[in-house]
Amino acid sequence: MIPTSSTLQKPTTQCSFLIIGYGNELRGDDGVGPRVAMTVADWRLPSVKSLAVHQLTPELAAIIAEADYVIFVDANHKRCAQTVQISPVVVSRTLSAFCPSPVLAHHCEPSPLLTLTHMLYGRHPQAWLLQIPAECFEMGKSISDTAHQGIDRALRTIEQFFTTYLQPELCMKSA
Image (cartoon, helix red, strand yellow):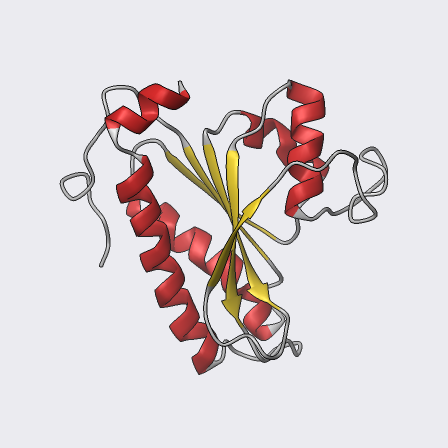
């Protein structure tokens, strides 16, 4: 189901949501993150910005700092993953080995990227990592049936987040 302005209440105080789908679309299931982000962008919902990127980079910190909520969407690279998994992303005390030097690194993981955002802008949004089950990461392969099913579940999960977090009373608390 594609949410519309009529299915999601428009809050009086706008909360902003950012969806960042990341992965390499040329490597089969690794492209599920960007595919989810592009689908959410097609919904054209107010207060929702959606980005499809190859990898998380320090340059995203400025965009992340402007959001109230962010969902990072990626393929779950663990072979045993069977379901869509969502977990909170927390700000760490230091920039870990996943983003060794914010000036020199070419890519980061969500937690160090939130930490960098907080260090640079004095704030960070509430964040989650949504991981989609994946099984094929070979160059030039198409998205597997497992990943297609995961994309559908991920989109329903994001829709539920919008229904929950774009309510006026929640926006006023975070404003």
